[in-house]
Amino acid sequence: MNKVEAIIRPERLSAVIAALADEGFHGLNISQVTGRGEQRGLVHVGRAGQSYIVDILPKTKLEIVVRDQDTKKVVDVIVAAAKTGQIGDGKIFILPVADAIRVRTGESGDIAL
Amino acid sequence: MDSGDTAWLLTSTALVLFMTPGLAFFYGGLVGRTNVLGTIMHSFITIALVSVTWVLWGYSLAFGPDKGHFIGGLEWIGLNGVGPEPSAYAGTIPHLVFMAFQLMFAIITPALITGAVVGRFKFKTFLVFTVLWSTIVYLPLAHWVWGIGGWLGDLSVLNIGGLSGKALDYAGGTVVHISSGVSALCAAIVLGKRKQEPEAPHNIPFVVLGAGILWFGWFGFNAGSALAANGGAAYAFVNTNTAAAMAALAWMTVSWWRGGAPSVVGAASGAVAGLVAITPAAGFVTPTGAIIIGLVAGVLCYFATQFRAKRMGVDDALDVWGVHGVGGTWGALATGIFAAASVGGFDGLINGNPGQVINQFIAVIVTWVWAFGCTFIILKVLDMTMGLRVSEREEEVGIDMAQHGEPAYTP
Image (cartoon, rainbow over all chains, first blue to last red):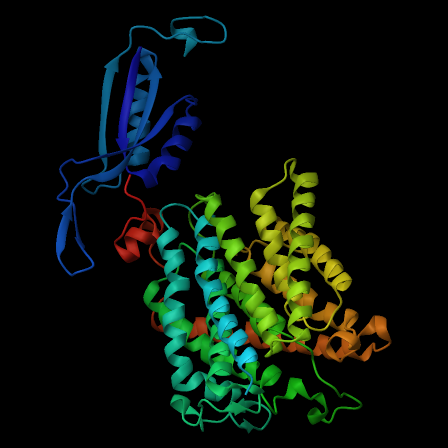
């Protein structure tokens, strides 16, 4: 099994969740993160007129653990729903997961996903 | 001149001003975290815009020497002739104080409309809209109801069989609440729905804080409308508090029964609905009348907001029509029902004067038609010239970043 970790634009979150749900993937975690990537950031003007560059921007991190055979599908779904074509669309990382256990029943392995 | 009256009116003026930032937080908490600054800015900048236009032309056209029972004249442009001596409007306070007090009402009325169009209104167009609306819609209406010579203050000028007396509106049920509520409905229809799913309130503590500030400021709104520190102000003060309280309880209870849990947003909204409904009645009814007015307002406005969300297909995002339009309409009619001469010098239906209800009804209909019609025309013209809505992408990103370049909260 793999963890799919997707850093995406916050405003695309509901579209991504809906697209995943349409394909049968419901369990996931969401956190608000900040960071920087390739984008040059934004120029803000402060109260006294000085300008400063902000290149630490808010994004949303979505984590979903899936079976090996579902990994490519989930990545494709996320990319299709999260993409705008502009710099700042985000990145997806795949991490291997050693095991998964359902707390309520103690089941482990793929059936716990 | 009476220093007690003047001190109270200066205080009331400040209290009513405070209601607009209170409104900003009430609305701000109800929207999502990417639209909160845009929402707050709508209210905040309205204070700035209307404060200037009121001095330049607003006060003169609303309250100046009457022209044809329709509008005031331009004699007081730039507050020319408006000075420290009392006016015919309030014999014991400086004219400047009366003008300033009225300004605060002129400010909050267009600010109320903004709740209907959160998340999608182009800021530049909104600025022009606010100046046009506060001039074209508000000034004549204020003149008709409160101006010396205004026709809703003396229906006999219409020369229509037997119509006489006045439409009672103590502090602005028609001028402020029906007008803004109905205009909000119109704006929500003309602008169209948000492309995104309606967002959940992002900060309910702000909503309650805002409602508390509104309740506090409303003492100035209603009790200040006595234009004196006297028994009339005392009645208005007590009625205001009582109606707000009963309406909060009523809405909370209905939300509990219908929604399964007592809603905090509901309690706050209920209080506001009660405050809206008592506004035209505050100096005319007894405290027990205020309880009934508040009770009905809480229940009625709850169902109006449900109806809007489920049946009307209109994205009045923060239910301005449901609370101010419907609440104001109930309050205006209730004034005609419950008015008691022992309180404010006029009797209503329950005290043997059913004619008052007719006068109230006329004012209500006129306000609905005037507000909706003028707002529709203004928005259509602005749509053709400047465009009303932001782009879909801007809506997605949120008004705060898209229109103002500022995130409300650093993550």
